[in-house]
Structure formats: C-alpha cells, structure tokens
Image 1 (cartoon, one colour):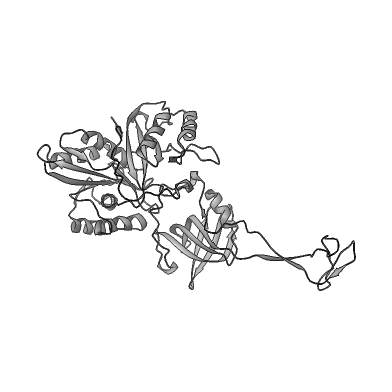
Image 2 (cartoon, rainbow, N blue to C red):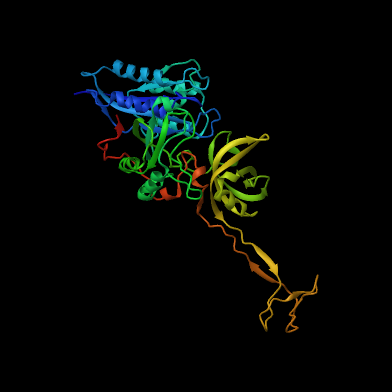
Length: 447
C-alpha cells in the first residue's frame, strides 16, 4: 500500500456574526474519518496566530488537517472536493470580513524549514497575502479561494506549517443551526463540578476570582462550549461531566498551541526593533510610572538609549497591580503586543517578570536607645528627642521598605483576561515537546 500525505490548511471561513473555522474542520473530520483509504496522522490542529492583528474576527485561529490517502481506494481529487464543498457550505461568504482560503500540500513541515518559519512569522508578526502566495509557490502548495482578496491564505498556509514546541488539547462542541445567536444553554452547576473534578489536567474553565464560567463563548458562532486541557482523555472526561441543555450537533478534539505562549519569540528584542502588531518580549529599566484615569498603569521602559511605553490595563487585574508597585530603577521583562497610541508604539502587556528590584530606603524618626519608643522630630536640622527619656539623637533612622514584588515570578492577568495563547500559571513545568506517540483515544469526535 502506497499512501499520499495530504496536509490541508484552512482559514478565514467565519465573520463576526456567523461561522467558525474549527466547526468547518470538525465537519470535514466527520466526512473523512471512516472512509476507506483515509488515515488521520494526528488530531486536527487548531492553530492560534498573532492575536494583535486588527482585522481578525475572534481568536485568529486557523486549522490544519493531516491525513494519509491510499489512492487505490479514494482519489485525491475526491478528498479535496469533500474539503472544498464543506468549506463552501459552512462559510460566511456574504461578509466582507470573510475570505476563505484552503491550501493543500503533500508534505508536513519540519522544524526550521521554510514552511515552519512562515508559521512562526504569522504567529508573531504581520504578513501580507503576497508574501504568503510567494511561500506557497516555493513549498509546492496549491491554493483555493472562495472570494477574491486572498487574505485567508496567510492563516491557511501558516496552519499547514505549524510545528508545536508545546501543545494542549481542546474539545469543542457545536450547536445546531437553529440555536445560533440564542443564549447558550448548559447547566452551570455541572461546569463547577467538572472543574472541581478534573482541574488538575484542564485549565481556564472557571475564573477563580469571580466564578465566571469561561468555557462558553458569547458570539453568534456555532461553538456551544470548549474544554481545554493537557491530554485528549482529560478533555473528553471533562466534556462528559458538563450537562448541555440543548442539542449538540457535533464535537471534535483538536491539538492546539493554546495556553503555550507560542506567540512570544524565544528571546527579548531590542526596543528599536519592535514593530506595530508584533508579539514581543522586551527587557529594560523602569524610568517612569504613571497611573491614569481608569486605574491603568503606564510605565516607560529604557534599554540602551531606546525607550518604549508599556500599558497595563485595568482588566488585567493582578498584572496591573504588580505593575503599580514598580519603581524607577527596577529591571523588568515585559511580554505583550505592540500597538500604536497617539503616534507612539506601546506594548500592551500580557505578562511581566521582575528581574531586579531596586532597594527602597526611607528616613524615619529613630528609636530611643533607652526605652525603644519612636522619637519626636524637632524640625529641620534640629534632630529628634525622646519625649519620655529626653534622649537627643541628631540622625534619622534609615529603613528598607518591603517592595511586595517577587523576582523571576511570572505575573499574569486573571484567567478571565487570558488570550487564547496565554500560558496559565498551572501549566508552568508541564510543557510537552515532540510528537505525542500515544495516538488517538477511542472516541475523539462525534458523530
């Protein structure tokens, strides 16, 4: 038996009011799995790309489906037509924000090759469709478009080029069409019970500060709820504990780069090299801190003569609080997305680490050496006196204030403010590397 490898990348099928690229992928899985001559090489990949792109719809997610095809049993053209017809039937072709693209390759990427390097660029910066089409030609990808602008080719090709340094899984369940736009109906108590039972191997189910349920989206898209976790078995077991109070059309388990911080580069960038819409890491010294209306914290970071503003917005909660405790002279590492504010590049902070904490010394009235009571200040250059013992002391006491910051600790926003790619604290030390050799669990999609 000779099999042909087929790597299918899909993006931009949805708009702000309809559709979902993962839903398209789930329906393709249903059509292809079980067909004679088709073997899935991995779970479908849900590939989150640069979250700072302004024209993204929701989570800037694309998908890659990787299969082996025995052409003695089913033709490649038939497989491609199943994919294209499914994308066509489930895309929002009436929206100017939707521009579906599908790429087909007869290879999977290898770490460091052109295809994988393209994925990393799209993950961390802004890439044009012209650049994507050039790379597609070089790697031998065939591209199909349902509309004319070809914007979707960027994400479609990037998903086909994804190689995950770390990965998680998400089980996504979908609603029947007549329920789109209606309030999502799941039993809230079952979600709290699920989180309590399986929280060791799942994440971002409940916001611990507010009790807010995080597994349900809020838009008109087909997703009913999604469970994120460390293994396919973990998300499947969690899914079974959630009581849906409406019909589920289908569900599917995806392997994904969510919860991995994959959008950040391997090392900090020089401030002078950052560009608008990049996801970056920068290190520098705090030279100024301001707390502005709304409680937002703005710090000015200096590095080698270059300076950049970093914004810690109020919804980032504990991250903003940590930033409010910074002082000039502290050294920090800031992770975030680069936006433009009043003509200046600003990093919207998503995470922070404190590298060095400047010692903070203050002068205060000394203690009486006889009785230990705090002395009274007699005024400028007049020293201090103990009102009980009449002991005179000329010099103030200098004490070091506790700063309340921890060196090396990753400060994050609360879970309700996490982006899809944000790595939660509970995942630190649980990173996975390399291909999961355990294969598929017995039931990884429905129907």
